[in-house]
Image (cartoon, rainbow, N blue to C red; front, side, top):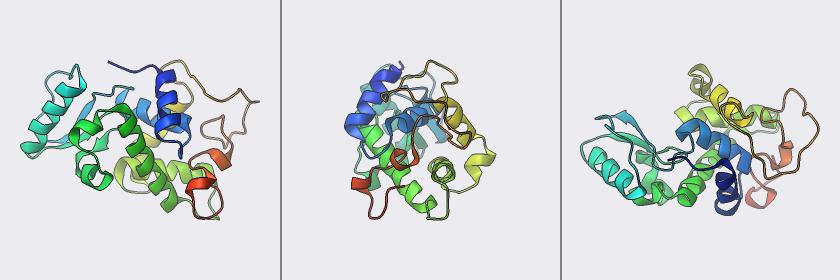
Length: 196
């Protein structure tokens, strides 16, 4: 079961306002194909059939984690090792609003690491995406994750929906194509310094 892109954008606006909704939509597309019940197994037994409901997904995740598995959960594929730090239960990870908020928190933290005054905001976002995927500033580029998110943001693999009015063709450096750098990842209200 996949969510409609417009529904994910609306949820992102409501549940994770510190991150541009288009950015979260692209991450969710690349991570789970917009499936809120998705389970990615990093270590442990494979998932034999896709869970049909959040309750079924949570039960499968509990069983696999209990057996020593390391999993990525829900829309933005929150790693099971991060649940406690993010204040999430396994059930919360399959609730789209909570999952998007947690994904946004991780991405904003990673952007904070990647964005320094001398770094272009688009380059910082790409580095933050690499960190989001691997915890490393370059491995997410090498494994193709950053390229997958950029492709998802450009509408590859499905229709693009936007909560913002259309704008003229952006410059080539604008990775996602419809956002200005100031509002791209975090809003000024959530940062301690100047807006990125």
